[in-house]
Length: 468
Ligand SMILES: *Cc1c(COP(=O)(O)O)cnc(C)c1O
Ligand code: SF4
Image 1 (cartoon, rainbow, N blue to C red):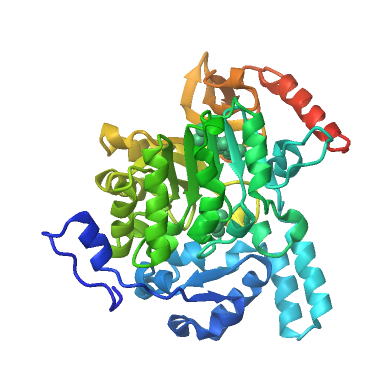
Image 2: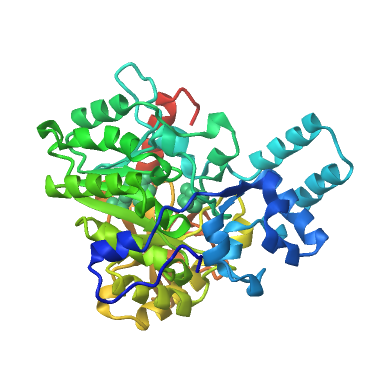
């Protein structure tokens, strides 16, 4: 624990405990340029530090002092899960990509040549999985794309505020990694609250707004307020739920503690709740260690004191949490702290995917074994779920039907709401890690949703002026 944190006293009220104990803590961040300034990395060999430089030339790297001091157990690197979650590792690049960048760095290649090679490697890492750019972005009447808005499932709109397109630290497995490495064309964001409000006013079938990023909690509260406070007007009564996707409870719980901006945020959340909105902080968690500091727990208490709900979601990842005991302990601790477990995701097919992927068959075993260890209140987590282009597809289990071993699947969310909750079946495949590896079971040629999905896809791509 860092020096600023005084021990919590059992007799304190929540307000006292969360305010008095936490003086403002300055935010100190490190990026690739500063790798050599992270004292704790002195434990690694020069070769290991060079490997980090190579990998972080391609994939984004950003870590802050809180993560370094309070979340990582430096006596256990490189295995420590939070170290794996934030620090680049050699295996995160394919050997040929690693060698290409390493040899340019070793030979002191000029910047233009290096940048070119880096850009080429990035483009081979499927920077935009699940057709996000063209398939999910709505257009206005004149066919212009509404940047910063994604509307894939009828009732939920995603919004990417431009000031929220970074994070307090970066996750090594992030599926939005391409946004963080400066590829402007890959960045999804909107600079204007007006675009959002106009869109929501016109689309009254939408009940849920999901603020996302990056991490919207990197924004100053007054910017958040500009987007959210207008939603209290009667014309937005159809927006029942405001969700904010964030990993700030892990990477920077002081966002919610100790400063005027934090107090203002707590007021904003309270105000939204009291006006009748369901406010949900969709907290991204991968490991129980993220929940296990005084600052994290105080921040959780403080958010809950506003009446906002915290729901937890995150992907299943090799090297970080591919172990039922880790999930069971995490879900139990979440329930103890008043957090609702929501989703276990399968890692998406982008970036450092090969390093983190877990076969779907194994993912389901981990999910099931973890579920068996927890009480009903922690069994609200769904999954393992693939966020694929047609929808969120859950592995419900492995079964034998009419002598054939199959995966039982269902849509938790679908581009067509009619697909949701219909069981369907894929041939069992021990190695498959994503939907596109699976084949329909029982000799069927197509998935039940395939023709409709292709029709939707053609529509969207032709609206975008692209060949299907
Ligand atoms: C997951 C997701 C949502 C929200 O789905 P819920 O099942 O309601 O949590 C909305 N839009 C997109 C693009 C998503 O991936
Ligand atoms: S906090 Fe979320 S958006 Fe940010 S790097 Fe991690 S996974 Fe990506």
